[in-house]
Length: 144
Image 1 (cartoon, rainbow, N blue to C red):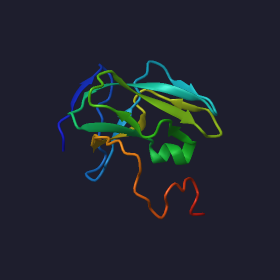
Image 2 (image 1 turned 120 degrees about the vertical axis):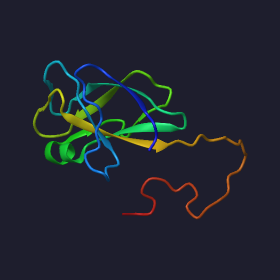
Image 3 (image 1 turned 90 degrees about the horizontal axis):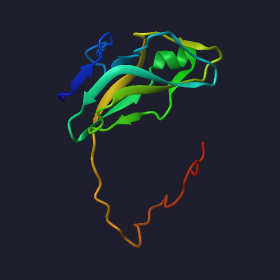
Image 4 (image 1 turned 30 degrees about the vertical axis):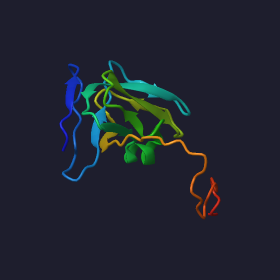
């Protein structure tokens, strides 16, 4: 476990792990009114949460599988990264890929948050990279 300081607005829900083996803590919408996301639309949904993540870590915001399967709800920019030096409110970019409008209510579990170690790179400029069998083969180059 890593220590993460959290500020929670009055009425907002503290993230919660639903089982001892959960990798992600559920985070909830913090809304005054119901927010309806129409088919094909996106919305920025506040959570009322502010974090102080230790240096060398990030929080990743990921979709909830049940919302994706049952309603076609996913998150854009997935996984979204929250950097250790960000102190603003955590908001979630929800997208409705489903066939019906989707109502987001206050307190609804809308995403999950996973913490991960971050490694910074020391970039070494070179003129030539080591060749591999793949080399510059890109998208779909190995077939289906």
